[in-house]
Length: 367
Image (cartoon, rainbow, N blue to C red):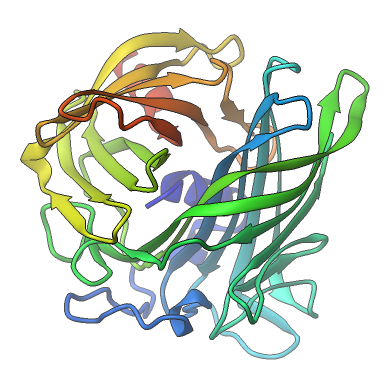
């Protein structure tokens, strides 16, 4: 689900709207198709949209925390394909770094049609590239990730410590009340991270430092949009300190009610418990107003999953991704600490919270 609306907004700015026609012959997401690992780690070009979405916490040699995000999107435009220059597929990349020493999130993005070996998403194994940005899954299962972005750089290796966490029903993940409002979706939580980061400074790129940490990787593909009354969503992916993993999301209507919600908690021994719409709640605790877009985001939240509650607090408040001057996407996505309460007491950790659609909700409220 991650940043689907933001990505489609970016594509609409790059192509005519006819390139995203609803009657294009995209493959359908249907129940009963199990995730085929590792074959499904690669691209699925017959589906309309797809993303490989990594987020995580890093630590510098002086024990200072950083948050990062790097994402590759693939989109089928509905146009004919083939040849070295392939207009049927578009690759979009986002990268961001949250550095408390800098005081706010820095980010960069790029977009290009697939072709000439410069931009592609390969079948059969994770290998996505856009110019100098790349994510590739090596033969031993590790991921090599690089992004030389404007003002910062990421050169990281993700090492799996657990099997993939298959979401939904064997990978069929509902996003709304209608069965076709769904995606194929798996995650790789508790990835061990090593590498280096070039941090931002007031003059551009600053120092390059070695880092260690943990990450969460989502891979998702679909051919449908969210429900018609959906305004945005809240999403959490958290690596808990005891080795367990928590994923939860709420698709919101414009009045804030849940159009759909779901959560999955996998314990350190690999047992997964899933929770339906009535057992997942996101409750705002504190808001932050963006000085750039004037949007209010609930950057501190309490998430209820069944009888368990987790309190989320941001690494820094200003983790808004504002790309109105390029792709047009505006949303908040940031590193958060996770503290269990009640039945989840002692189950703390670190994760990423994504908040989309809040700017649109504010605009709707003015009309």
